[in-house]
Length: 129
Image (cartoon, rainbow, N blue to C red; front, side, top):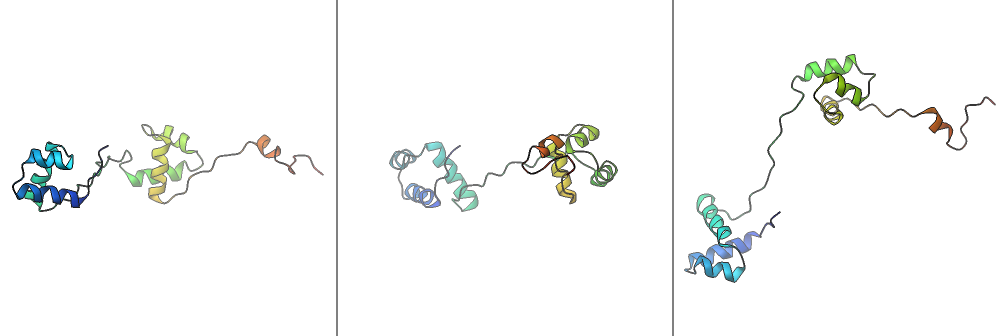
């Protein structure tokens, strides 16, 4: 990924070009490619700013469209794990179910522990004393 160059350096490059220095000379002096300088000049002329543009990835559409239907589905199948819910809902992963649960304000179902793993902990036993 490209490094964002400071506004000061961008402004200095534009000032040098406006004072009559050629783009090639400024490119060599500041070690910046000519296409980059052309983009900065175009940005300066259109917006009046030399600040780098913020890169924001485009938003992805939600796989769960009907949130009321999703809430009813969760209320009906609340005893299931997220993986089981994903299979029942269809076409989504358990991660999507997790994000959906958080969005509607539900907490996620915790993993169940096997009795054998609990018994292996020191001090715990299934035998009656």
